[in-house]
Amino acid sequence: MKIGITCYPTYGGSGVVATELGVELAKKGHEIHFISYAIPFRLHHYMDNIFYHEVETSTYPLFEFPLYSDALAGKMVEVMRYENLDLIHVHYAIPHATSAYMAKQICRQHQDVKIITTLHGTDITLIGLEPSYIHLLKFGIMESDGVTAVSRYLKEKTITNYAIEKEIEVIPNFVDTELYTPKDTPELRCRFAPNGEKVLIHTSNFRTVKRVQDTIKILEIVKKEVPAKLILIGDGPDRTECERLARELGLEKDVIFLGKQDALPQILACADLFLIPSQSESFGLAALEAMAVGLPVISSSVGGLPEVITHNHSGFIAEIGDVKRMAKYTIDLLTNEKKYSIFSDNARATAVEKFSTEKIVPHYESYYEKVLNS
Ligand code: GMT
Image 1: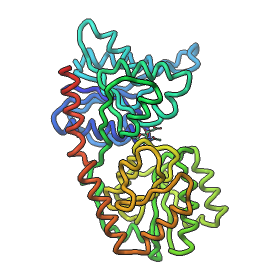
Image 2 (image 1 turned 90 degrees about the vertical axis):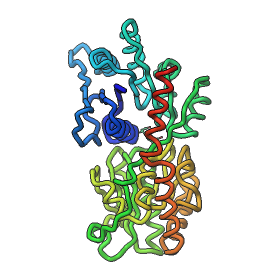
Image 3 (image 1 turned 30 degrees about the vertical axis):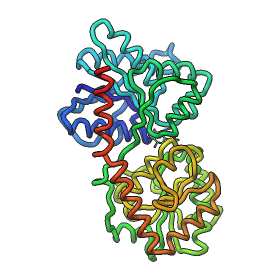
Image 4 (image 1 turned 180 degrees about the horizontal axis):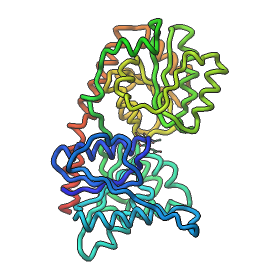
């Protein structure tokens, strides 16, 4: 198939999923055309059936705001026509689904390019509900030839929030379980925890919805019983506040801010436990990547997280903001070697058996076939 993929290319789960899906589909022989404003940040390797088409917006002074969705639609038209695409798969509905709709209409006399929209999270739970976007979001979904959601939770939210009567296929996110694999990395671990401390870890874009401050509050409680360090990977609006909180609690030596990192699989592999105390999370790809390297997860009970983490099996789930309980679960796992090892094995097994690339990518392929034949 000739497949166009549009996503946000920056740090974020939807861009990761879109990029890794494109690369996996290319490995299977499909021709992939990424259409975005920058090269997706996880698109590292050259393959001769992967192409990148950059969307350029005009800087004409009359346009106080860049006309991105129009420029994107224009680029989609070019790629649809000249590369003869079978379908365009857009990740994150706003504004990608409506741009794709516009491009499809422009090309419709000569070709019938199918549009598939994957809903990822805040496109449905937050931004799409804003009055400026709600009508466009609903239209974009209704006019897509196929719609997928990354969790059952997100599918239900879409149906209830927007009163949409549309078939939505749930295709969960996936992880490369060969890249994200348990590894013994004593040297790296020693740099973070030189005195044999336990290592907690969290990765995110440091937006308020992630409640990163809670991870620091959890460390504060855990440290009273177990010597521990906390690694924070990523960057974003709440980082400064997190750094301030770590200083205020006297934990500046124990909370290690690494910023954005490419070596995520290696760094994850030298930790003991992953924390994800989010306010809202449609799936929690970051937790899945951690589980793949064998880290049990302590999470909040929101959104799609319980579809990824099984309470008392691959981790523990607590109410949003209940840092005391999350800390208690953390201490429980860190002080019980046998239990820890069972949870770690369960976490890895869940990633391999339910969410591996090999399990999920064929699901997308068969969904594409279904939409193309419909
Ligand atoms: O929805 C967002 O704000 C951003 C989006 C992203 O691009 O990272 O995150 C969502 O998509 C991820 C990939 O499907 C999911 O793993 C995240 O849970 C989801 N984030 C939220 O629901 C807050």
